[in-house]
Length: 194
Ligand SMILES: [Zn+2]
Image 1 (cartoon, helix red, strand yellow):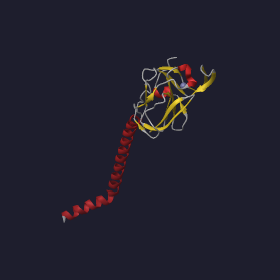
Image 2 (tube, protein in one colour):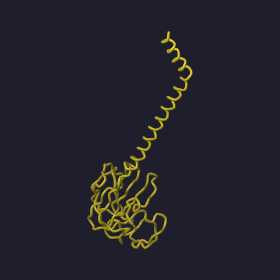
Image 3 (cartoon, helix red, strand yellow):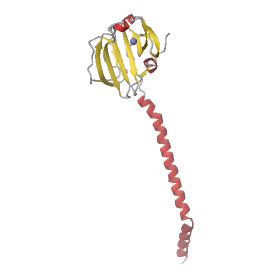
Image 4 (spheres, helix red, strand yellow):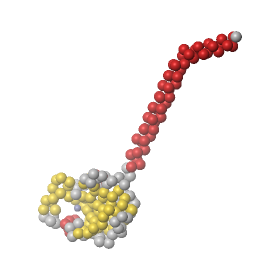
């Protein structure tokens, strides 16, 4: 009988407090879930920027910044003798120097014309596009080729006759994932020497 009454006591206690025990348990699991979510979010924000922000490879090595990017302002073109915007940067370097893809990507276009010389256009995984102008006509890539960061695309020349005053150079332009021109010097973290 003593046993029974002890059991009965337990049942009564549970009836009286069971609701609170369950409520407490639910609250505890909710807190644990929130902590796990918070920790995962923290991990994500720690990992994502480093995994997507690959340092770009320099399109040419040991070059001199001859002309800056003028997206909205005008700059004087000494060859064409006119004021105009400049959608890229001119990197002066010896003729025949290697030109490298700044990031992994796919070759979207290869073309030549009198004013720009030979141009290779590469679209990258982040949606940005890089354009390499004033190249020698003999390039290493075709449209549709996959290229890796640091792959040689072609060689520097003075084929862009619209920028003849720059001599042998790479005209390097970039577009963001909305296809808007951006300052490549800022993207490549090239300091302004002027
Ligand atoms: Zn240029």
